[in-house]
Image (cartoon, rainbow, N blue to C red; front, side):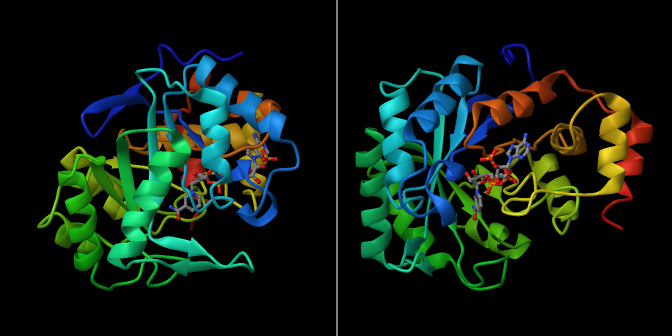
Length: 288
Ligand SMILES: NC(=O)c1ccc[n+]([C@@H]2O[C@H](COP(=O)([O-])OP(=O)(O)OC[C@H]3O[C@@H](n4cnc5c(N)ncnc54)[C@H](OP(=O)(O)O)[C@@H]3O)[C@@H](O)[C@H]2O)c1
């Protein structure tokens, strides 16, 4: 079992978390909808993650919906003091498994209460507001109204910190006029590097950047460069993809998702992998 206890940490709100965390989205059923094929394995994945030293778990009540949070509660409640659970709100699932915007005051308030209840928490450490102007990627649009609602829920003591997901640099700047933003969660990986400049800017500001789809998401990364580098290093392509992210910038926090303990072990094993500058530039060529 890997041991992350000596691995690097980074600030998330007023806590420090290990840079290798875990994303819980894969614990729901196919299409992130309905129950998983193997609920017991899902419970065991979460327990092994935390036993291995993971203290940052990313989730949402719209995974399932509700199911992923219920499994987290079953597996880990009462939670270790050092565990930071981050959730996200702003979407609601249709009966056909579609992802729809849910930005009204009523929907946002309900989403925070649903997360609190299903996770068994009295306060959520970090809530990300997930922009839905374009479900597939950042698109301009005002987040002022939903952020005011979230900031109010924060003042009520239900939410400790606020982050943003699927957002542009302008939306982050605008949001900071309303409340502190402690993290940004956008799609980013070796092959999808639209946020390069934003990551560097957030690193200068000391803000955590949490890439979703770090392994490529629903279609895991495939590239001969990645496979060749991995073979030379006696690592797996997925480990190299994660090691690249860890070295890419100090403010990157990883939340790879998996429904299997075998993949979890592989992913956490990246803590022992160090990429040379030469390998980094070879991998950097992949995006071009
Ligand atoms: N803010 C947002 O809009 C947003 C969107 C998507 C995701 N997220 C968050 O980001 C987290 C990470 O994203 P993700 O889980 O969608 O994608 P990901 O981490 O890029 O990849 C997960 C996929 O890779 C597979 N996988 C994991 N480890 C592997 C390994 N070692 N070898 C081979 N395959 C492996 C998983 O399958 P197995 O289950 O078989 O391992 C799954 O199909 C999510 O869990 C969620 O918390 C946020």
